[in-house]
Length: 486
Image (cartoon, rainbow, N blue to C red; front, side, top):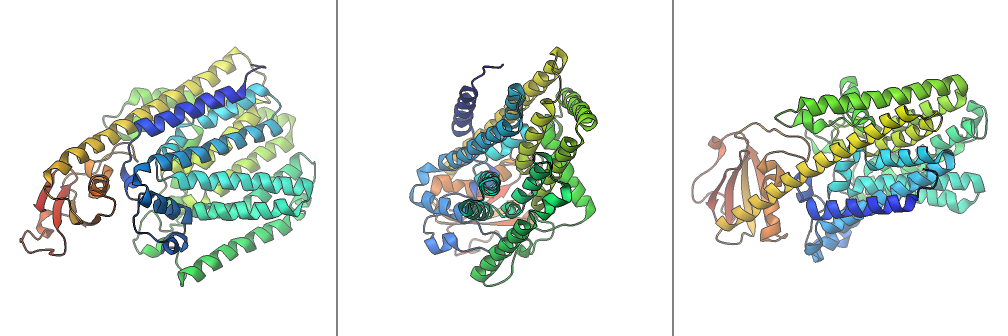
């Protein structure tokens, strides 16, 4: 263990993950209508904010894919995995500077690399924005530390630029205008042995500066858009982008994010039918035993080093602040646990470095890591099968359209209840984005309009209905597809 070569472990992990994602994961659900090829998009459209989001890098990828559609979704995956590997490397760098025990550094890295909470983020071709937002965010933290330790203005400037880029990758990146300062307050308190309020006082200028630059971001955004509009402006009550500040919603979202990030519980065994209670119980018990180990270590730290204990609590609180943009939304996705899993791995490494290891403790840690691997494999295999099912469906049913459509209208009907979980297994209709997946066959410039209906009585079956569309078909949740015109 003393002589392990980190770079080889990291290289093997990077190669295996890249191979698995690119060659075994087909696009499903969100992948098929976000960050996809967009022919005809102009550069002005790329950099201007939209009504809901301002993510120019997303639009830039769409712009590039519009000229090179054959790169979809591999370009998305390469960008996502690049950001992910940079985040992993920064985690190792941070652990090397704060943890002296090599085996604890290794375990900390493995806890993040193997966490089931990151599977959604690193496999979904639409979620590279979240990975890049966190990568730029954590780099902004490193740059702020560098700025404070060297007192060089260039690093303060780079901190702001990196935080701004994080926000442009995805809106939740706005927390990084302040979070690096909060982390440095903890560093001042623990490492530099300053009094807590003195540590805050010494950094209050940078907190105010960060808040002012965050306000500048909003000013630029609203000026370019021409009005004040945020995510909940789409007017759909209860949507994923609508703000919900009720205590019930916040607690539910925190439970979802934290629970998925600090355990190896196989949520597929719970949410996919038939439910596998055996796997659920085994993964749950192993997770509880590992968390008890960490709690025991934390109690020991409390007895021996009050400052380190307070620091760990503060870092955990910082992790809760980082995910605030998620918990105030209508609902969270599994991918929103990426940031919390990162901080949890860092905290776990700190705690494990203060524990006297024996074979019993090693068995608990190894069991937890092995459980993570099995859950990861379950998710990879389930997602791969689901994606392959969608791909086969689209390839097969595209043959029934005699003419290549250019303008399509789809009646989307839920004839059976929607069952599934996240991107891993929904209905055929949901997985193919209500018919938008046919663009891969017909061409990315094909215009497809989807109308959600409750029952067949809402459909106009007359031959002259919807004359502006050359193709009209019904797509049911059960997977039935009926062509009305082509």
